[in-house]
Length: 178
Image 1 (cartoon, rainbow, N blue to C red):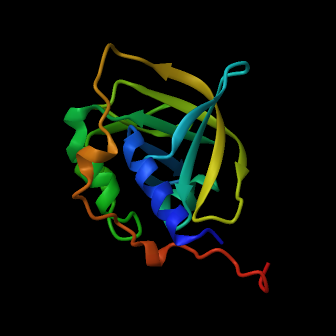
Image 2: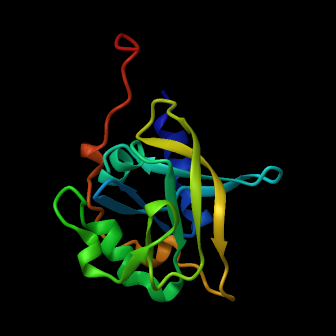
Image 3: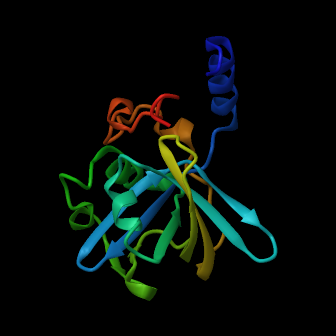
């Protein structure tokens, strides 16, 4: 386990990065889900790959396990209300899609109508190294890039209260349990 001083320094360094935010949507059968994410990145140049990390506590994670396709919507600074909708409410309790405009996209994914900078991706693999998030490595199958935008960043939504608390997230197994 890391020393508290190392953990504090890590947290301070991550705050300085001020990551851009996105909403990931998934659909399995009639069940739709979506959540706000801050962990995302291009993960390969050739072939093109994109990775997103989903919290194990989120409804979206459970739906994503049952589907092959996801949509990743890059949020503009003007999309704070979407960040609030998809980041502060739990899909376990609320159908977020009744509170925003969306339409059906390729492979049955839900596309947020206000987000022109997005991609539909095919899930290739999952990486679960025991933390509270799982990495989903994907392949873009449809990409829309509609002009310049200013990404909504973590610092823009620091006041929002997540739909799941840290306590609800699965804890890593102890050495005895592993």
